[in-house]
Amino acid sequence: MSDVETLKAEVKKLSAKAMQAKMDLHDLSEELPVGVENVMATAERVRDSYAALNAKRAELKALETAA
Image 1 (cartoon, rainbow, N blue to C red):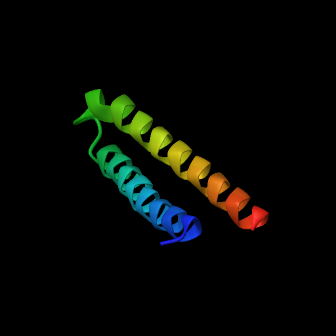
Image 2: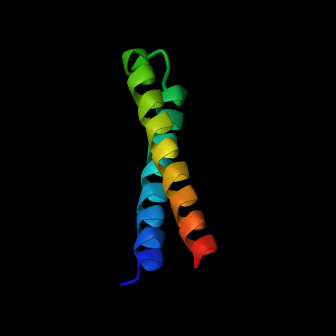
């Protein structure tokens, strides 16, 4: 598998992970105030997931541009 294909697979996995984290936060928000103690940890997971996804997308774009 080429580097580009590997990065595309990683982007796809990170995208799914970020989307799941976003949905977890959405679900948690619908049940507030129940679970309020989990809001910050879940929001941080969303932030971290999207940061990782954006970094990997930038890496993929740079590799594709260089090719």
